[in-house]
Length: 248
Figure 1 (spheres, rainbow, N blue to C red):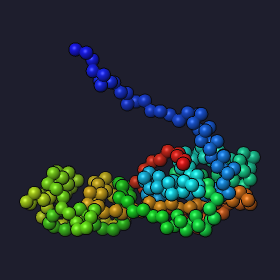
Figure 2: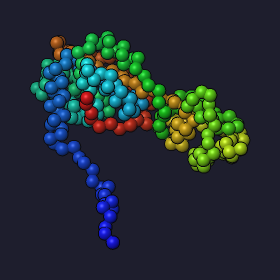
Figure 3: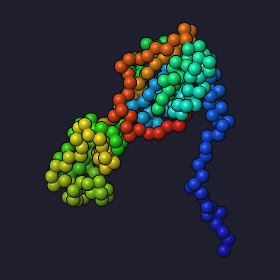
Figure 4: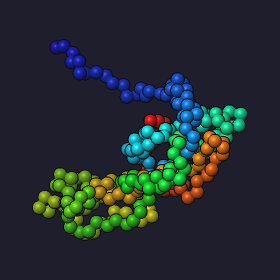
């Protein structure tokens, strides 16, 4: 019998690594942006979600260039000492690149940038490790989804999943039903994977994606200004997506 062309052995152990050429190209892009734009902002993200960061990139596509992740590469491109810096004074910003942060190049006036990012906040579902923003108790009766108004009960085929997550449900006329109230989580406590999954299933969003501006470099003066009151808390950083360096 002829061997099927669909039967192909796919190795799951091979992972494409970032080559030296790729890193050099990225550094070149950052340095070119440093030459092109007046301001360079250092930022961090709370409740990181790739989809929301892509939205930010799209909205700023025509007026900015954004790089996020791989801090060592970004810092090296900018230069972390007066001798290595690519532009006057930018080493003071490069020295602050630690952890999961990004840089944004733009000519937009600082006050407009600050106001835009203060206003851009996107609610999303919490992940394991996030701290619950409130106590959630499911009442006795049908388990309801809160994704739409009016709320809808879960279908019968999701009852096994609800039980697996710790809900003591039973089918009542084909609807997963609780015989007694069930506390999903307590305000101020980290969420377990099961709790986070239940909150997602019922449609309860507990975290907010936002961008915290940390500092700003001005090419006309070479000065770096620290931005007060926009830092991201450790609780907001928990349960985040991991992101490679990307630019658009």
